[in-house]
Length: 86
Image 1 (tube, rainbow, N blue to C red):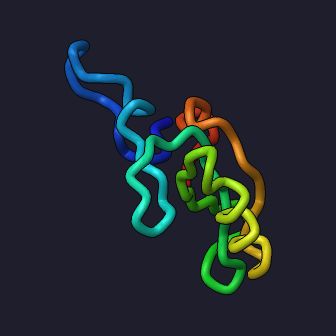
Image 2: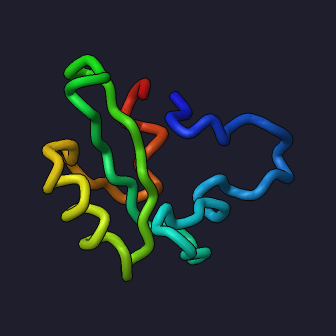
Image 3: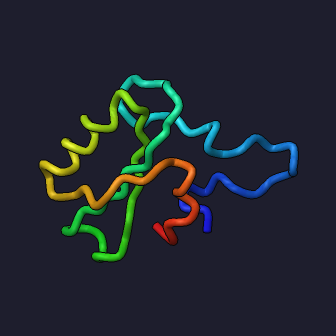
């Protein structure tokens, strides 16, 4: 399952992980991590939203989500399509 909706396309299409960009404000670096989270006031417990993070912003974004009780776990960006539906 393609969590980010980036899959499909012809064989010449680059690997979607190569196109992922960090979610930190103003950052244009490639993302190497997927931060899985949900807002329990809005989402069912099974629902997972995804923020992307480069190595430099991973800890900051995890802390931001954790402070609000939203962060669930972090996975390598290459594993995002294996995490199931969002």
